[in-house]
Length: 159
Image 1: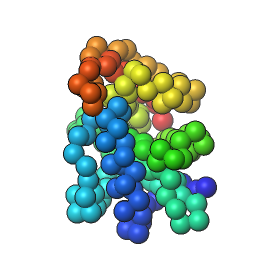
Image 2: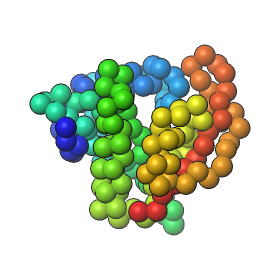
Image 3: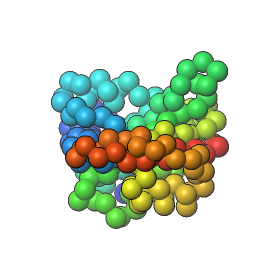
């Protein structure tokens, strides 16, 4: 499996994977699914999008973009999505590693995650194993699909 820059041919798979995570309602802040038009616009608007693919099949993706502007424009943000059928195969780790390398190449100095849901233990363990530092806890910072509120844990790593 390789991680590479996305191509237009990847969009339908990327949109399906992204929408699966949005629909689960436990990790991404977005609530509205992407369609072919909004998905193409969304992914094109990112600083970079990478996909984990093998034999023409996309299993996961990441988006990378500035976290802020101006004097904080050197800090980037990223989101990762892996198809539910492909989870547990270390695809997320491959995506994060590629993202860190790409972010550095693009001139970013820090990668910050604003809203890692506290109950997303697999992501949190991965980030901590890769050297990210948790900045604290924001109580009830994320509204789950079922309406409950969960804490969020911001993380960062210097590139």
